[in-house]
Every structure is written in structure tokens, then in C-alpha cells.
Image (tube, rainbow, N blue to C red):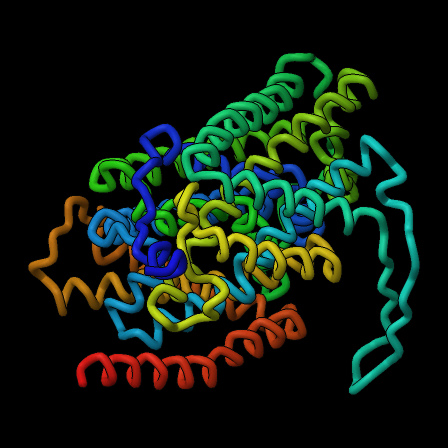
Length: 473
């Protein structure tokens, strides 16, 4: 028997206990978003009340999603998360479309945007990171405006971190889980430091010029709110990552609900306090124009030296988010390749480390290419548009499975069913339509990349069917 055949018979191990499971949820959510998105939310929302409304609604949507995914994860604790839920709820083609989106668009753009955030933090510590290497001028084409693409040292720095974290997770899920616990503790501490500095230093003051309430509610205010909400949901994103490693979670019937619900609640409280802390120290316009909001807050209160150490903690925080994103993301292309529905290069378990080693390398290469070509904001919007389409569809699968498989073992049932999952689906639909209207270029790219999977699925499905017929003969 060949080594290749043996490796395909290996299985992933349940090496993620309750602390590692919770660390994946909290550690993925608290990453670059909380340190970079408050400025974008202020620019897009234009009013203090709109910013806080976006944080609160984002927390509610994330909690409702976590409640729904807790039922799915406890009932179907398999690698691939939404891939397994959609395949079981609607058929293999729907599972494939999620897996294709996740593997080609969603996770690589998520990983590359986190790595781009690390590079942005690094530019505060080492300004040369932001120095341009060359500029590529893109002329007007097919109605598009001319565009200058500036290639800086930040892109190679982002790729370097993608390589490092891929290697860490290549060497074992227990190592990746242990690293995640440590880095999560560091990032929670760094956020709490900013909150403490802002509220207990006595440096905060009133900012009477801050725009608090809009003078009237109209379509422009709704558009501003939805744009701020999209930014907030990037900061909240990550609560669903635990589901992707469902086959590696110990005691999934208990650990899924506890980690998801407890993690989202903790992060929501931290985010609201963090946003209040930033607005207490800095005027609203300063928040909107900040590139390093946490560092600017600490620098205003305690000086540049303190801001330097704060930024270093933010880098560690972002590394933790990248670690969990790499760890969980590779399980989807692995699961699809195992089922014969994806590139064979992503198939197989490493015989020594028992990790989906090839899938890790595959997603790392795609993320590296994206990191070389995109900016943080562009990459996050691409991910949110593509990802939330399938978050909503996965919860629709929950409704369908309740009807088609009423006898399925469900150790945890979604609280507030059917209203809680229904509201989540409605919110996901509104969000994706808003991004489609406001950022048609990014949305079109996402739809084209997703649609590119259709012919590949048809060819892969024919190959799998032919293999089954051959075995049957």
C-alpha cells in the first residue's frame, strides 16, 4: 500500500478542548478589525449614534448567527462547517458552492486582509514598511476610472506572516490551538489596556463639536448605517470559524454552544467599551481619519513610547486572529478534496502531524497572491459580501433540516426558533444587497469568482459518479 493511500485513510484528531474552542471564537473575532474598523465606521456612519447603532446591531446579528450555528455544529460536528450543513440540507451542489467560495474567495481574502492589517500596524513601528517600491498606473478601461496601484513593503510583510502562520498550523492542530490560547489572552489584555487608559487616566474630555444625532432620518442615513454595519461585521466576524473545525472539537455537543455564545457575548461587550473609549479621548473627526486608532488613543494619553508598545500588542493580537483563520480555513478545501469535489492538491492528512497539510499550503498560496494585490478595505469588503451570502444560506439549511430530518440528534436547539434564525437570514440578505449597491465592482468580482465554480463542480461530479460506477462494477 502506497504512502499516499495510507495518508488518505488518516483522520483529523479531536484535539481542541473547551479553552482552545473558546479561544478560536474570541481570538478570531478580536484581531485587526477592532483596531482598524472604528475609523472606517466613523467615516461611513458620519454620526456617533450611527456608529454605536452599527456596533449594537452587528452584535445582535452575530449572536443570532452564533445561536443558529451552535445547533448546526452540535448536530453535525464535521470538518468544513457550512460545507457539511449545506450539503446535508440542500444537496452536494450547495455544499460545493460554499466550499468553492470559501476556498477561492472567502478565506484567502480574510487571511490576506488580516495580514495586511498586521503590515499596517508594523508601519507604525517601522515607517519604512509603508514606503512605496513602485507604482503601476492602470488606464481607464471599459468605463472604469484610471487607478494607480502603489506596491509598498507592506505587501511582502503580509505574505511573510501568512507563511509563518501556515507553518505553525502545518505542524499540528494542538500546537495551533495552544498558540491560539496564548495569543487570545494577549489580545484581550491589549484591548482592555486601551479601555482602561481611556476611562481611568482622566485624559478624556467632552467633544461638543462631535456630530451625535442626524437631523433627520432618510435614505442617506440608512445607507450610512448599512455601510458602518458592514465594517462592524468584519470586526465581529470569526464566530463561525469554530464550526469549520467541527471534527476536531472535543465533546462538540457541549463545547460548541458554550464557546460560540460565550465568545460572542464577551467580544460584543469589549467592542462597545472600546469604541466608547476611543470617542472619549479623541474627537469624532480624529477617529474617522485615524490609521492606528488604538495607538492614537494611547499616544494622546500616555505619549509615543506607550503607543509603541500598544501597537506591538496589536500586532500580536492580529497574529492570533490570523492563526485561527489559517487553522480553521484549511478544513473546507480538505473536506471537499476528500469527497472528490475539489483540486486533488488539497487532499490528504499529513502522516506525522495529522493536519490537512496540502490544503494549508493551497490556501496560503491564494492568500499570499491576494495580499500582494489588494488593500485592507478592498479585501474585507470582498470577504463580507461573499461570506454573508453563505452564512444566511447555512441558517436556511437549519430550517430545512428541522423539517426533513426531525429525528436528527440535536444536543442543542437554537433559542428563539424560528424568530432568531429568521432575523439573522433577513439581516444577511440586507447586508449583501447593501454591499452590492454601494460597491458594485467588489460585489461583481465576488459573484464572478463564485460562479466560476459551477463548471468545475459539474466536471468533478461526473468524475465522482464515474468512480462510484467503476467500484460498483
